Image 1 (cartoon, rainbow, N blue to C red):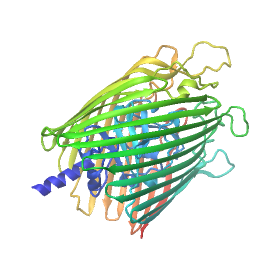
Image 2 (image 1 turned 90 degrees about the vertical axis):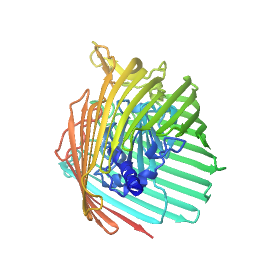
Image 3 (image 1 turned 180 degrees about the vertical axis):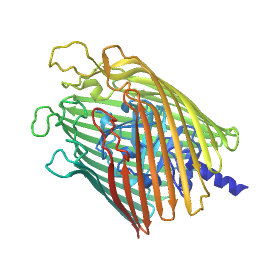
Image 4 (image 1 turned 120 degrees about the horizontal axis):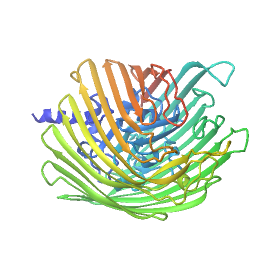
Length: 628
């Protein structure tokens, strides 16, 4: 009976992940995962918040080329790509704006202060990623400012052995290239990785390259990424970890920001990120973890193309962060406490030179002293040099009704401070507003989960209220011919969102069978309410998803695997669209050969701005891993 319960628990961990359809070997890893969203080190199996995980096995199976595309498989996550092949995308959670989602790398905030358009300019190749954690709901109690609707944490691989890996792939739409007299649109890429572990030290070095001539006029891209991760662990009580990443991302930006006049636009974004952190178990009950980080970003944009300096803008931004987190364990529960500071600056031809400082501190407490009940409560206090003091309390509850039924409840508040672009940009098409105040929100969510040895179902409802919601708008009244009406942000008032989400995961046969089948379906419904005046055009307020359906199916027979990933999206302001992708792969010892077809039905659709996404696209690739 005990063995049966253990097996059931392990199976449940993977099944509760709405986007995951990992094989049974993934469950042990998930069961042991410590979610980086909490300084109190709560295992995934005991989390009461709405958390999704994309495992390394999921990443390898999905027919996707970039982090942006991988995130389209997560329920509640809205990926609005301006460019394919990972060149540029905005990401939001549960109907929020792209500025309201915090992006982290190994728990370190790397959100861009210039504009969240750069948040996904991540200096990590897909090959270096262990998993992706998505924390849904207000997370300011956990991460501080700018985690108003949730957070996405990229976790890189833990080095446990000596290994070399390589991957190459290429593909095409087989449609004629508009920028050449002959040839077709294509894309290709390569990723290399090396892991080395010796005694108390371990090192990982990864390189990724992608380039494409686009899928339409002036959408070519060239993307290079380099990432290093090093760890020194003198004993079980102490660990020092350092990492560094760099990305050079260049792309044609036709229609990205100012369609239809930006047909020749081009952009280059360079980002460097580094962190140094350590963890020290000073006694049986007390641990402390200091951390330093720095993110530097360059953004250069040519409105009329690189052939002219007219309409050219350049931005330099830098963020330095320092924090210390500690945990104190007692017989009745565990306390978490810490302090952090963040210094942001920008020097820009279009925004000017500005600096601001942010200081925060938190206190949390979790306990399982009451039978079947887990309580995690706390508050984060924040001071910003531009926006003053704020306090973000929060509470998470989990109650095991029976062995198979579980009730979860969470409530919290959050803040999003305006970006430098929101406040100070000064361009023909976009004018900032230095009078903006911060957005403030509260949310409550309740849900219920059911699990058995082969099936899990979960459903939840949330209500979120945002005060002083920021949106970019412009008045399209009568103006003189040829006059450009600029977009300008303002605190337009209250934005409320009611949401319902559910997922169902079923394993169709015995996990030890020669042929195994897995299917997952998830559904999200959002009902936002916001006031937009007549004659005023909104840039972001009414573009969130209303309906979202994700359906994944995998069949695994010996060394063969077939995965189909399907998604249906309906936006409030756009037509709905259905996208189906498929991957077939074969494992030959250390070599994996795969073939992808994306957008099988050649659907025409737009996710953001005026950028049609690629139609049907065919790819072929191979991955090789060698342990030594």
